[in-house]
Image (tube, rainbow, N blue to C red):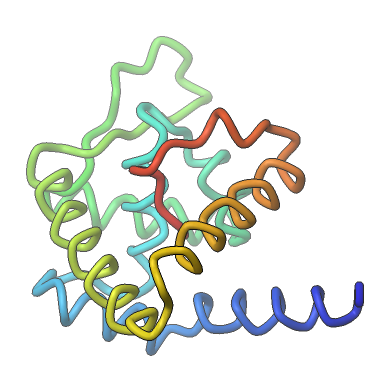
Length: 154
C-alpha cells in the first residue's frame, strides 16, 4: 500500500510541476506571467516578506534563477522589495497588483479543481480535504489544525 501512496503522490506532483499546467492556469486567469514566475507569486502571497533564498529553497530552483525572476516581477509591478536592514538578505512582498493577480490565479485554480472534481460527492470532497490536510501536516510537521480552507497548493 505504501508504494501505491507514493505512486499517487508522484502523479499529483508531476501534474502540478508541468509548465503546461501553469501556462494553462495563467491563461485561464488572464494573467500575463511566465510559468516560471507562478510559484514565486504564489509563495510570496503565502508568506509576506519572503527572501530570495527561502523562495529558492521552497521552489527547488537555484538562487540566481529565482533572483532573475524576482527582478522581472519587480519591474512588472508584481513584487516590491521590502526595506533591507540586512543588505545580505533580499526580501520581497506582493504589491497590490500582485495581490490582484494572485486572486485571479486562485479563482482560476478553484474553477479548474471544481471542474476536475465535479464527479466527487460533497462527502468525498470533505474526506479528500481532511486526508490531504492530515498528510500535509504529517509531511511538514505541522498539525492539520494549522491549515484553513483558504490555503492553496503550489
